[in-house]
View 1 (tube, rainbow, N blue to C red):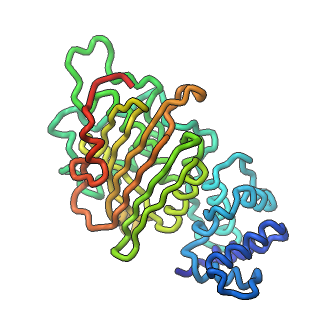
View 2 (view 1 turned 90 degrees about the vertical axis):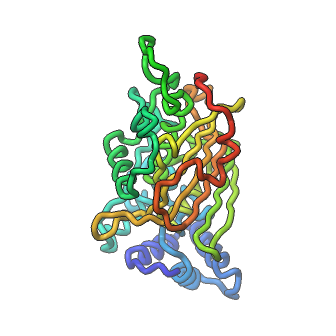
Length: 353
């Protein structure tokens, strides 16, 4: 792994050689960490060389826990770039990358910079519903992979990533006479709303700590190849966000859920709601023909609980993610899940959530 983009190499050198003594300490520490203390007399120059030669890209480097958000914020301020003091680390990193593109002549394609005013959890006056309420068309087997991401991106563009109202008591009104299909059960609508909202936030680098309970836990199981796989477990909102950022910057993928009924459902527990979903792992940028490359599939379990101290919003108390790189011919379905079988055995009810 070598950082090859010239604007990123120049930007890294600029950031990690600041006069701030705390930043310089971090620079030396990263050099020691990456080299496993194999360099006897570490210097700023040697640390920079190690970073350039052993990191995938600048985003991965800045996402490391040792690089505090306050360092990024002060650095941006030194260039008179206005950002909110409480901006998430993802936003600060994106501003740094944009600065380096402009300053050092990199690509001018600006990444998405999310609003720092987003509330945790989806909230809108109009709920999003499954594409169909009929049993025949609530299955994704007839959807091609390219149609899958095209439909999802169209949904994101038209809805601005906001999907459900705080009233999650289900669709329709008192005049409804026909019983709803399974996909219209309140818990399934909530699971769909939150799943769409969560992965739009994930793909736009705009998830922040407010989406999680203070004691939330996260487990990520990753299978890139036979020799590149493992499990990461962290607790607490900050560590969860840092793990997500690290994964995104290191592997450059986006996760697009199957939003049909066979790919996204909910279950009610005493402690809250479980949102179960599966979907496709795509590369982060389209190819020459504007088509995204499918890298594999994923499964997700999101445990939700309302927070009475924050307008009764749903917040994440548990997140489990299983990502597997493989050839994918059809959209993944929950019925074929390896991680969610036990959760799917929980009876599906029409109870209000």
